[in-house]
Length: 406
Image 1 (tube, rainbow, N blue to C red):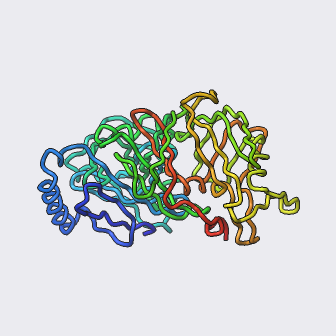
Image 2: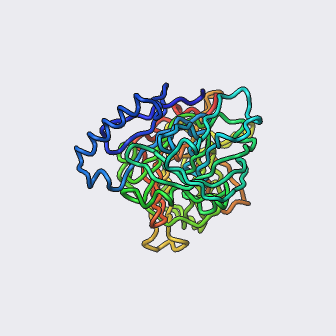
Image 3: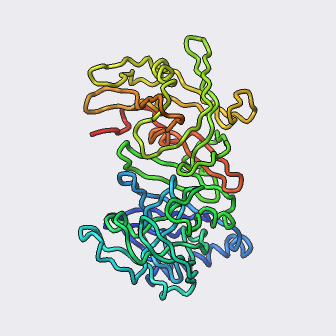
């Protein structure tokens, strides 16, 4: 199977779901014995009140071509599934019913784990159907366990028939952990984060990623707390813009740059969208001279790209004033500093560094890319509906080491 995982049990209050090379199945006697012993130790150590208090959890994913894969469990006793975890776009949770017709499943992928409602004592059928591009099915409620200390009953979809995307992918379902404003899977399926908000220590999710330009790498989602292991403490928070398909979007008022001792400012009054699946930024044409001048880029007419010095220390940083809804003097504006490591890439094939950005007169937004996500952490506060940004502790310091092509 493409993804095999270990649901590790430790004595840490914040529990980790990680993807490694074997499974400790929550349904086995070995897991049950280990889990029972651990829970007794945990309850004794932190006290009964704390044991039954709100929770934190960490979900780690292994990313393969932008598929973020992780193990989760559902039901009582727990049934384990390998799911695609979507932090950035979708907010629904979907599994496959054990009675579903699997005849359309690609024979070249591993067998799928399906959910058996009759084997779970905590299952509730909500007597509601849904349709989606992943397939059609019914809405249910059961315990979703993202860790020993983060378990909560949630509404989710159980597929009776599979669409092509799920039938051809080596996953058992989808766990959407995006703060979706518009649920693009099905209107009948509620957002998972909204359901978990009440059981978390803090109503927040933090996301750290470390990917190549191909989308291969790993991610960590921390629910109920700010990630201090992977993220610096220089968090800034700005209001989320209500955007149907882009949950991580916020307003940008202007951009500043100090070049040769002269401070320059360009008014923007647009929105920034975090696009973690793109190798390039997509920007308004007005920003072309800013990126060119900040890096001293030289246009290669034969190759059709801007060549830049691979020594990023020579470049000027761009400062974006964000969150102020067009008021460039508003105290609501926060400063987001972008270094050239966010938008300069290295081609091993051509042995050249270049601007990883496209410019257009026809776009009214700034789409920032996978390198930005490697250099920053994101957070979302479910109560305040604010987006947090901080520097990553594993930021790119040498663009030649960021794998962007073959």
